[in-house]
Image (cartoon, rainbow, N blue to C red):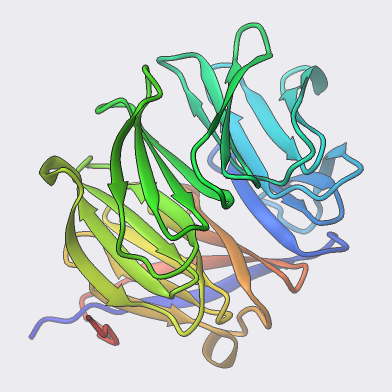
Length: 318
């Protein structure tokens, strides 16, 4: 059987945050990305010279969520228990601050078509913000437990939301009405991601299962994989969409084939000097095909991935 392996090289370990690194976000340049942590610092890093970060913002609370808005060159910063801040990266100034209820902000999404910002809140609510007027339009209370993750499919005009009540809810993005409720996870859903080709929704969470849902079949279950030992915190696709990676509370990163859902590589502390604690967020950059990971250990790792022609198959399926 033809197999595929990946050679992994740890290119850099970025330090400077004084608390857990919760989120990573891309920018308008492939080589530049942003990080935010429990210390309230929002930092820009350049993969061409990753040794030193540039402080973009310092907020008084932890930051779980960032979102870059390409057309406007904005960085959206979720202040836990406070507000959403809009930073103009050209001018390096705060454009607006939108007051929100005193709740954790777990994720942020943006729709270019609808000119709206969506915020996942700790009480199971979805905040909807007008991106032109910077006003909170409404809060939809969709569950009794936290809304943890958001993903937008602009082609189908759908918003996927993963909740701590184990359910994924799919909303019509324009009407903000419920279209589907997807059950299958047995614990909190921490991450949802649409495949770039528009065929699948991927999800993961505290039950450590990677689940694949077929969009054209009204989100029919396609496959379920016991992907990690502990919670899956994040899923990210490679720039070309051929691969995706999962980061876990079990301290590992796993790289997968996006067509076959086969496991290609495990990146961990023993084999690759990986993270010593939970991997919270991933970002796959188009710059030299580098995968970036942020962790509870307060560091950010930069991985160079070189693909060859063989498989490492550790996959266990339900």
